[in-house]
Length: 219
Length: 219
DNA sequence: CATTAAATGCACGCAGCGTCCACTAAATGG
DNA sequence: CCATTTAGTGGACGCTGCGTGCATTTAATG
Image (cartoon, rainbow over all chains, first blue to last red; front, top):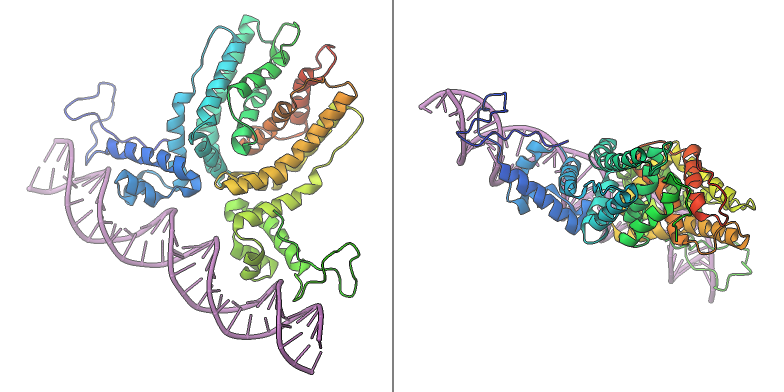
């Protein structure tokens, strides 16, 4: 998934944890690696996946095309890694102590990351590209979707332990119901992807999730 | 959206409703039109959007490339119209007399159309392609998504009139919650898109929609 | 200094899009 | 029957961008 990391420890320093001896030859340029990913994200934000060209990335990054092909076999893999690396920072477990608040916060954060600016469009275009190639689709699922789902599952499980969430809740289905509408709006752009939407999802879903039988809070 | 229809009434017959006189020149071949759309669907089912080539369609349909370009400006527009025309038959309002049953039936039907065989993958790949071109995205939304949404809205409104659905329900949000999970699974393939899933969606959502405050039916 | 591997620069083959053009085919009205 | 109009054919073309190949230079190792 990640381009194979062959970066060696800084000159002179011997990494204590590293079992293998220093590799021979010229070390991989970490700066090239970063510049390529940056240029890729930038180009996707401007031109979406279709407008992403290896030649363009090479030019922007000030790097030769061969260097890119050395580390990423195809354009789709490059786009994928750029997308995943850029997305990591948006996946955070709020862990507020309340399952309902956790879910709401997480969805609000997700909507915020994807809903404004060009990044959402770029992500959508990568999802799109993944539809044409099952291997890319799998990588995207594992690197992007499953990470979000596991955070969601953790929030639900904490809720079950605390007695806020009914114990027999169908976790995978619940996650589909939570994330599905967000991807739907991301991809179809029929309405804004904002905090109000995130709140709406949780408010509608919570009565089907929560343990107590108190009156529904749905608007 | 549709390739402009210039087919004229059959020879000799004067269409009563037609206001304009018979067009001059050679009439458009309806058989070519159909063969092109069929070949497009077939090729997308086999090779997804990326594997769809105008040259390939021309060959399969036994038609010249120019004929295709005459009626569809780009590959994406061709894919779009093929997708929309093939999909019409799956969009049916069950109108059972019960809003809950209507919703369930409609979602089951949708899952059935998209969940097995190659067609679902083909549709997903068109959604994907739409992400790279905002005009294609808009057409897809209007021709495919909005048709389904308006059927859904009608089912909910009938439910409101009959008192089964709470009057203040947020219809667009509810539709997002219903359809979102389906598109999510269609695109991400994390789990099967089957009737059980459709039922799960309705069962979970129904308590947030229905007018009465009877105990929830969620599993 | 020899070795190893990374990065460069340039050329190439190839597929497929979209266009152009001259030609043929099928309808029209006079 | 003929001029006109529009549809469809077939082949050639230019272009972009992918992915490869290869000789060369650069930065690290012992």
